[in-house]
Amino acid sequence: MTALRWEERVQRGAHPVAYPAIRALRRLGPVVRVPGIGVVVSDAATAREVLLDTEHFSKVGPGAPSDLWTPVLGPSVLLNMEGVDHARLRRTLASLFTQRAVRELVAVSVPEALSSLPGRLLAGERVDLAEETATIAGTVICAMTGLPPTDSAVREAMAAAGSVVGLVRLHRHSLTASQVRHARAVLARLSAPARAAYRDGDPTTVPGRMRELGLSEDEALGAVGAFVLTGTETIQSFVPRLVAIAADTGWLDRLLDADPTTTDGVALRVRVVEEALRLTAPTPAMLRSVRADAAVGGVPVRAGDRVVIATISCCRDAGPFDPTSPADAAVRHLWFGAGPHFCLGMPLALAQVDAVLDALRSVAVAGRALRVVDRSVARGVLIPAYRSLTVEAA
Ligand code: HEM
Image 1: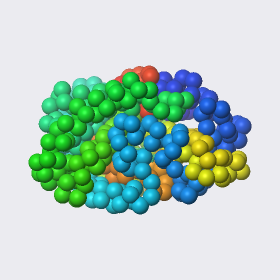
Image 2: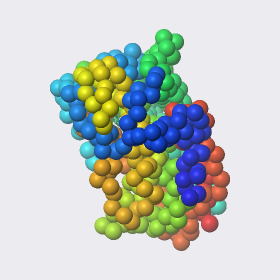
Image 3: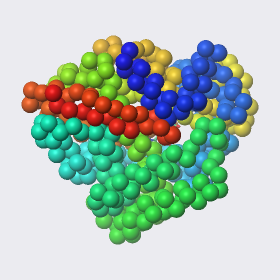
Image 4: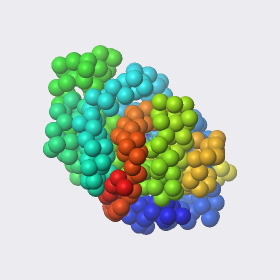
């Protein structure tokens, strides 16, 4: 119960009005039309049907992500594309997200931040995991954009990503002209080194690799922008919430004891992480525009309508946090989406989670236990998160 109470606070800190409203809709039915918002889906099986039906539902069109991001990033950045062009770009980018590629990216970009963590904890320091996660996510952005990961570059990269993602609100279908100007200016600053890295063509950098893969400069910079928007706040949100949920449910010791070099250890870690992803659903909603008249869970929709998948309700309602029972098939991985837009960055997300858990595990290996000693929730953010989560080795 403590875990759920804290999760409620995290959600309400971010969305004091929208979150309770979206959750209350479930009582009216699995699919409900809400004027000004769209047709809201709270049921996992129906959500999956919408995400897989690209004939009727699209990320391009009125009320879809294209309305938000095309004016900022241009028309070809995966999350505002459909059809063969989308499939081709995904195929091209896939090699950046193989297990090997993401583990190398994480290993190269975050060793310093992570390697000092066990020593500091074991020396008795209290550590803010929200701050540590921001350093890790910011360092990964630096690696993606080709910025040298100095402390200030890492902080600025995180602030830049947050200031753009934070512009989005569910009740507004697009950004205002001044928000678009702000977002373009921020991303232009962030992608300046990516442009230089692309032009240099050094395949050890992500933009250089993209050039080698045959992407044009615009495609490469658009992809970098998309990665920054989709892959930063989600990690910042998830890692501290994972640790908090594991602590609040009595699973933290088992999670950190689990040896990731053994089959059982991997299986336990995967189940705890998946359950925490299900409970938190760091991307709380997914948007689609209706391309052609259809029905969603029996509710008729017209071309141009907006469908809002309330991922948080679809995932959360599958039951209490329980890593011992098998994942419900309708819900499994829905927190990463489904169909052609399934999260491209999932391997990178999981590699960052593993890197943090490996670092925290050193506390368990030294015979100590990790405890959450203080926390506060973030307010006014798009992706619900802890502002701070302080831990210590007991
Ligand atoms: C816990 C962390 C993450 C969660 C929960 C998450 C969740 C999601 C979801 C739900 C979608 C599908 C959206 C839709 O269909 O409308 C998505 C798409 C995407 N994600 Fe993630 N994501 C995470 C981390 C990342 C990271 C680290 C990256 C790194 C680059 C990333 C890159 C992307 C991209 C590029 C897409 C768009 C794919 C497409 O449209 O083809 N994500 N993510």
